[in-house]
Image (cartoon, rainbow, N blue to C red):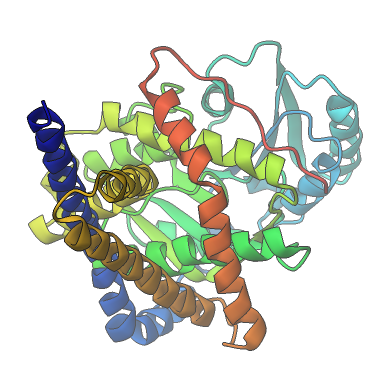
Length: 428
């Protein structure tokens, strides 16, 4: 009578040990990135600063650029975003600005029209394009905007990211230097990182993702994806990859992978930052992360088979490990914790090794990511202080609180059809 439960308990223990081993393998990607930072960061940052001087200041050599500002109910932000775009250091006759309104229902269109009129009177080439439906959401909006410009270079800035005037020259200088570079990505920074404990935790988390992981990926030749904002794209790369698609909630990741699968490259600039806004409440953050998590998991349905044809085998392996880690690790840890709890309650032989494996995996992940956070701190110009150490601890508290969101996003990604794109409310 007790043989079947005993067998099932052993199966659960074996499953838990297998999951622990798999998570440990995924974490190897972070170990690789740490080594890249340790041995390459100083040289690569110095090289980047030299590369940024490549673009000539002669205005007759500068191409036409289109700046796209996608907006939807952004009344508190749109005027400042337009001002920042129009203030970019580029000849006015070669700078075209599209304010792309995705069926806003508040006073955003009116406020945008007022600022557009003011800048147009000063000679700026700027116009408002509105659409009544939100088909394919941001991807559909950017696709429509691309059809309205003749520019061969397109910069995308979300409304809460306000670039300094010289940013566009830095990004374009790198893009023009290599005809096979699809896009050049600036580092994302955050104006309200010190607002409360939640923004402090997010800032550390996202610095770790961008200043640590994206930088190391780029230095090591591992595919790095578009962050959705603060980058300049080569139009030829967008079109060669098939254009913007709304098949997932992460249109930025989708286009990046398709372009990389066509043999295009990307470049990340660790020393060029653009300030944005972080969610200041947990409800807003949860909605944002649900969209990010769902879109990332959805993307595995459309993984380009030719992506790995253009990089070395070890680069392909690290890219796979990092991608799987971001998409699955929280859910896998929940399942692993469930296996440990089941084994403890049922007093299954082998519970000790399983518990040790679970603790070992946690130590590995927390240790590797905390080291990554410290390396990111150096890239963004910070210093290790008591406050920054506390912020790293807050980051881990945030990770725990977001586990239910990760599980929900994994479930939503399995559902057929297109999920709703819910914008992140911004304060301005």
